[in-house]
Length: 216
Image (cartoon, rainbow, N blue to C red):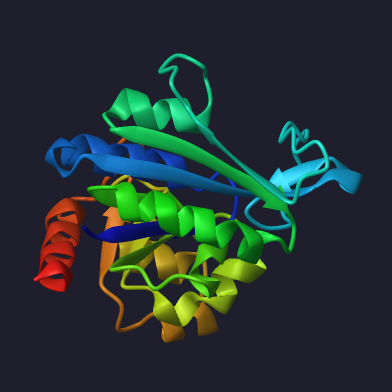
């Protein structure tokens, strides 16, 4: 069993699409896919980090955390997209901000039950050492989550959105001036990610090799 974590610099950079594409590329892995959401009810905001306000629909009802298994492939949620892509199981873990530690025992139980696990989150890295952590970057997006910056040095791979057709990932990074960030990531394997292709060429093979090496 291997654990893959897909994080991203901000909301809307394509994390869910990458998770779905990875599941579809390796259906034989019998993935359990997990989405982590931290909630700030007072400001009607739910996300993996404080950026990107959304209407809060976590339905915690006073609890510190809750875990729901998605069973509908047509529900229109990120977790239903996991199932539609071929995940064996799909879970939504949400908690009050700062309560992830309380949810971890149950998350570990779910991981132990799985054949392989892919988790959409940055903050999970505080409590979990995955076999592979891939960070989705979009040089055209100004926002950068605190959780993504915090765990930047743990990235095993960078999935770089290439906003201009025909432009390489390195050219995109220079154009959008990643600066000090790019220097910190200089030695991390980098894969281009261009719409509508959400799984960069070569990344599935890279992920499989890392997963199998860690398992072995």
